[in-house]
Length: 118
Image 1 (tube, rainbow, N blue to C red):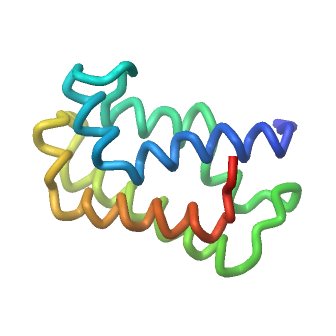
Image 2: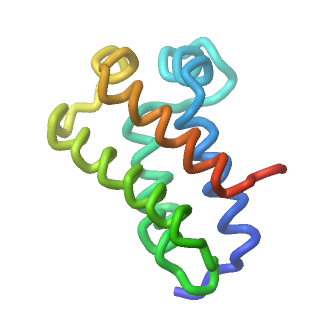
């Protein structure tokens, strides 16, 4: 698949910001925010809609070694979390799970390394 790299980066950045943002999750996963969102939606947006794995390894994106390592670390954490919690990613189970807290931190680290400013 051929990607418009600036748009791809922008769209993925939006999802990563939401992944890193506990307040956003608390408001929107439980129906109090202006967005319809859930842990399942986060996974869909990262892995299906924006193909984060391809993004991290894409020569067109051109991430440096530290950025790729951070991206792979986040992907590995998300995949491991999915196995721990199982297919039912209910917001009540996910929001305060210690591993999810770590995922939010890893998402913030990845964002910081991407130097995203939009």
